[in-house]
Image (tube, rainbow, N blue to C red; front, side, top):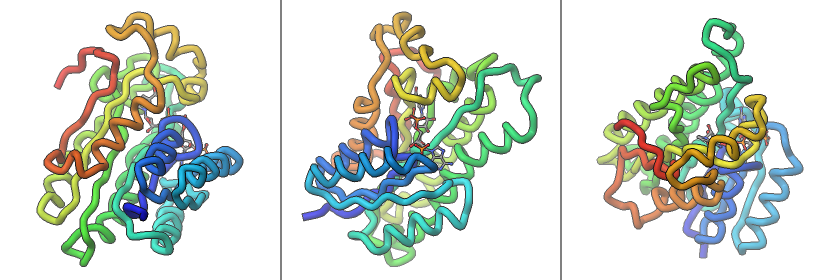
Length: 252
Ligand code: NAP
């Protein structure tokens, strides 16, 4: 029997895809959101179904309120919503802050920050006991960049993930008495396509050898942390940010 539905944004590739498949193996049905890569999303849907769970793929840009509404309307037709993983995230090509323009900055903030907040709003409206819901859990994707600042590469992205940290703590406190736990995972260097999007496909493996655990993390290793925070095993954890950084020291 299904444990309920989990929405995973940006679930067609990388950490989101691993989270969607891991969620299915743990007994959840999964809404697989993607931006443009329908073929990859359908592959994830197939893997979820192979694990014995239900899956629906929904194309939507999380930065657009009307698209976010469509994600949640599709989820309303599935088993009751018990979780949201705010995973969709982007970087832009590496550059210094004094080379950035307003279009880039607005897009980075819109997808990484506004998208997370818009999805959280819809999830709280459905899961909060204040609104007649039965509770649930939200996991946001932060980044080690939020603490390291990502100089000369993605300071805009790092600042966006800093906003995710504050949002996680604030929302957690707001809904702690309403049956919803809100936590974040802070990945370090994980081997996914995101580094190619930043113009440096080998970044993960190049930096990895300098880490205490001298390799890049895998999408599955991050997914395991997300899925633990989502689960009842984390029933007394809220407002926390769990580092999955291979031991890289991150200031609190
Ligand atoms: P990825 O491999 O680049 O995959 C990104 C996913 O997000 C894809 O499924 C993509 O869909 C989707 N997406 C992009 N823009 C979207 C939008 N506007 N609306 C909805 N979906 C959108 O990324 P990843 O490395 O797995 O990263 C996942 C999360 O972890 C992000 O929040 C990222 O910031 C965070 N993170 C990653 C690392 C790392 O080293 N990889 C480190 C720290 C934090 P399409 O396939 O349709 O394009």
